[in-house]
Amino acid sequence: MQNAKLKAIANGKPARDTKPWSNHDLARLSGMSRKGMSVAAMADALQRSMGAVRNQLKAIKPKTTPKRS
Image (cartoon, rainbow, N blue to C red; front, side, top):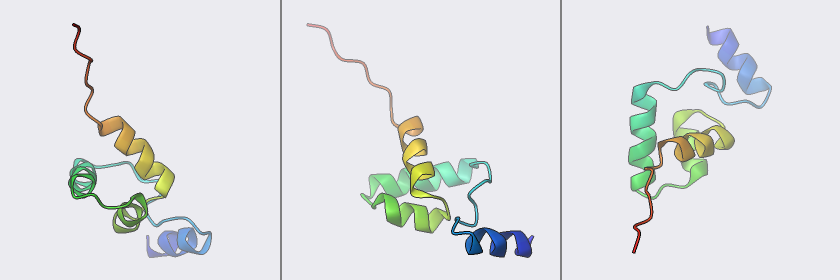
């Protein structure tokens, strides 16, 4: 397991790059987003790529529908 992490880091990828997002990860992401953290800071904290963080932020963004007049 440790070798896989080191190999991923050596290849320039975050340690959790290919791991599925857990409910705990998503809750942390949501909290960090509400606090106004940058995507880079969230990616670093979650050991994910910035692209993965951006994709998850889009997925968890509340869906709102415009009000009709």
